[in-house]
Length: 157
Length: 409
Image (tube, rainbow over all chains, first blue to last red):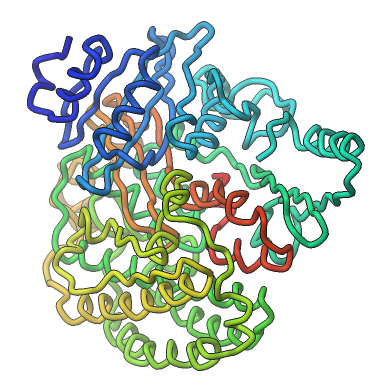
């Protein structure tokens, strides 16, 4: 069910029409729209946004760690539609224990490296990712540096 | 792209496949210190004769954890980190970050600061394109161009030094305006440079545009379809050389760009030569913007009227109690930024540069994510070089204009 504050946002209404259970929340803040999506629906919603709503570019995928709050992780997608000249932020909330979400590489190939980065630095697993290994940290590195419980100086001396 | 695990495993898988299929393919390890790879990029290339059959970029050698560092700096301190991301375009990174935080704060920036930012951001574009042109030509074998480009770049760095005291790590844009008052005599210095600059671009063109070797090495090389580019996250001059007119300065103007008259150059050919033409034309357009900014520079304050964010004047601090308190608070604690999140995108010399800043209402950001153009562009390297000759790899990746500091952060 779409929250009342998203009713004036055409894209959110379209997503709601596509899948009534996909949207779990959202807001408009400082002129930017954020739509929260149920993690299980992310791939189908992204496919809909790309092919039906002209969001042909995935600008970036990143995450925010809300430690110690729960659900701890937010996976954040920024989409851009060249045709509509419009930005959209999608957000999925994941629990702190065993955070898993499906990869959107099948929709945009550019998600490949961004999701690898999120896995590398936050330890969020992406299902069906074609190449799920670290990208920035060295192979065999322990821990995920951008988590809030990872010390700024690292564990090694 | 390799479907396997580590690069070591990638090699092993390749060798195993070859033994099974009986073909002889060579695996070439290019980098991470190869002189032509512009920094510490490592490419694993599988060759069938001289044709590349597979390519796997390995990045991360310059990963310095800047995004983690943001979380322990207060908002104003963190400006210095943004310089070090893309060290060839420090002011563009300053601009992206300060605009994002100013959006969170809801600050109004006075016109003089906005115009000054536009002027210096365009000088940064010239600086970055000059380094690109010089090194790109050097890679392909035209050494003279490098010396010409660095002659002009030196003058730009001197202008930066005049403004900020620093040649490269300028940190000149601050949240709320500029770091220092524009120096006396800046207009004369910038004018002397920009009046002659278009003729310098003519000089580069004389050396390259009709040069048969240059054309032979670049025309028809490095093609990648527009669809693939959009799907793989390429932005900036690469897209414009494929005929797509996208430029954040025009599409969603920031910092008063809507008040400037300039053209977004495009080409249709979508090869290394077209990217060269697009960037050269961009240099001429940047020169136009700089001239307009210099001639029409508004007078007035150069920092916002926001005492809780911007440091007070030195004189006021010594005479007014209130200013002294603000100064003490800003220096010791930093300023609080209202809760929220913004994603601000600007057009850096390399393409789309986005800053995603999340605040929880304290003096330190919860998260700063940089969507850097080099990271997005580099991802398309395998698609671009697979199937082409090994000799064209350097020309192709050179035309992407990536900076490894920008990629790895």
